[in-house]
Image (cartoon, rainbow, N blue to C red; front, side, top):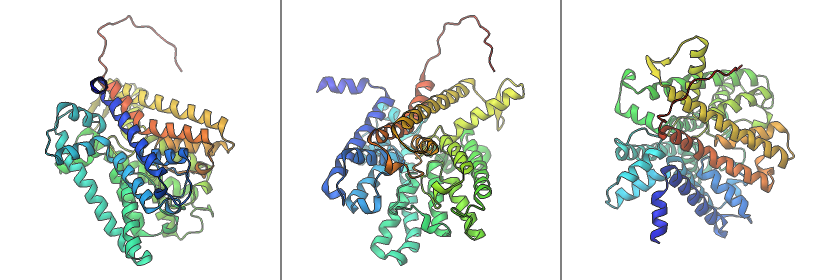
Length: 442
């Protein structure tokens, strides 16, 4: 017993976090295998896939959440989404505080790793604010959605449906109780506004929300917050215009809708690839250009320390700024009158390259194991890595090996980039210096 405890203590924070996610997935799998959880017979691989998808807040589903799972099973999925979205350590801190215990240095370090922070200052207060904010947002969204769904489905199911989708949306999970996601509400203003505000808020990053809570002036905000707010606005607007332009005349998506509904559909589908996972139009029927553009959005993902994944928007912006700096012949990347350090550029490049390698290798394996159109496979892989949850219809048709590959990719997508970032950020530079050498590139 003492030996096991010493092994756990000697583990690094990223290893403990990964182990925590694996433990949560294992418990979720066992609960979903119980007869009380499903209305049909469920295999171990399907239970594991669902538990992994929920814990990594992905949303890819091999079974119909609304009909194949009982209310008990759906509640299990909701709990897994909540734990996976806000992070295991945030809930651990909540339990410790509820028991009246003190938070030690190691626990603060784990929270720091979990929330992708660079310092230990104010960790406990940050967790408190985030937990209160998240529960408040989900409660408010449940009330607003109930105004739409209680008249349609009755009080009980209307409230329950609103709660389920509020939790799923804020945590960027993409699970829905309907087999066509939110396609039935493509032009509904209430559903579009509430759901999108939830996954934008959840995906922008907890540190950004905390920064906005602490400071009221844009100029006082941290550089990270400024980049996230500006980048999110620009990317969302551009994405909406691209989707609207490419799909405008497509009769299978938005071509037959009114102009107002076209705008709602384009707005929703432009934002959801950034790890949200809901869809209000048929993804499989979208034009190849739109699909390709969505691949980029899924790979970029949400913000650091958020409920979403991907390489993160700030990582993408740093790489883009570094390229622009090189093309302009300048030595340092500058944004908002602040210089971006070389170590941040190197870390961003490492995250992007390693992530791309993981996705590419998964596509290679899936192209061998699955008999499906190549674009479907590529889309599935990018969606799994970005923990997006969108699919062109391949998820339910995956082979057993294919499901295992996607399970691993979802886990890497949720754990990998954060672990890689901290492993690189914490590494100590060597004092040894070697003579410079020239290499021909390009």
